[in-house]
Amino acid sequence: MAHALAALSLLETRVVGVLYEKQHTVADTYPLTLNALVSGCNQKTSRSPVMDASDAEVQAAIDSLKGYNLVMETSGGRVSRYSHNLERVLQVPSQSAALLTVLMLRGPQTPGELRIGSERLHRFADISSVEGFLNELAERPAGALVTELPRSPGSRESRWAHLLSGARAVDTTSSALERPAGDATLGEISALKANVARLEAEVDTLTRVVARICADLGIPPPD
Image (cartoon, rainbow, N blue to C red; front, side, top):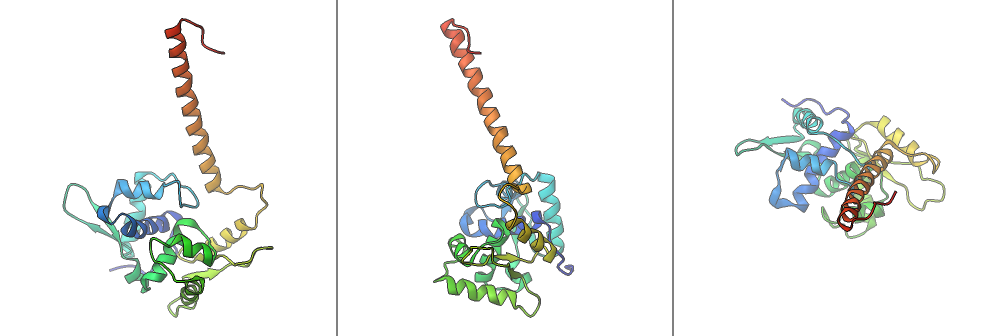
C-alpha cells in the first residue's frame, strides 16, 4: 500500500520530472533504464539547479518514490525500467502535469516561461490558459500543488513554484530569487565547478597535443 505523499526531495522531484518529460520527448526509449534516468537528472540543459547525482542516489530516490506509487518498475528483460504515475497519484490532468514537470525540472517560472517550456509536453493556446491551470493547482481541494511567489521589483509577471517539496523549499527558493546578483546558489556553484573541471581537462589534452607536435618537429615545447 502506498504511503501518504510527503514532501519530496529535490532529487525525487527531478526523477519524476525527468520520467514525465522523457515519456513525451523520447517515447521510443520510455520507460527509462537507470542509466537513462541518471543522465536525465544530470542533464546540463533545461535543468535548474544542475545536478551531479550518482547511480546509487538516483536508485534511492526511485525506491522512495515507489513507496508513493509515483514511480513504477517494469520487470523483465536484461535491465529494469521505470515509469511515472504522476497524473494518477496527484489526480491532475495532463495540462497540469506538464506545468508541474517544468517547475520540477527548471524551478520557479512565469506563466510565459511555462508556456514556452512546456511546449513539447502540452501546447497551451495562450498565457491565460496556463494561468487557469496554475490557479486550479493552487486552489486544489486536496491541497495546493503550486504557489504564486511575490513579484520581484521591476518584474512584469510573478513566478510560480511547485509545492511537492513543501512550503519551506519554496521559501528558500523565493529568497534565492531576491538575492543580490553577486550571490550564487549551490546549483550555480556546482555548474561552475563542472565547467572548470571540463576546461582543465581540455587544457591538459591540448598541452599534450602541443608537446607531441613539438617533439615531432624537434623543437622545445612552449613554457
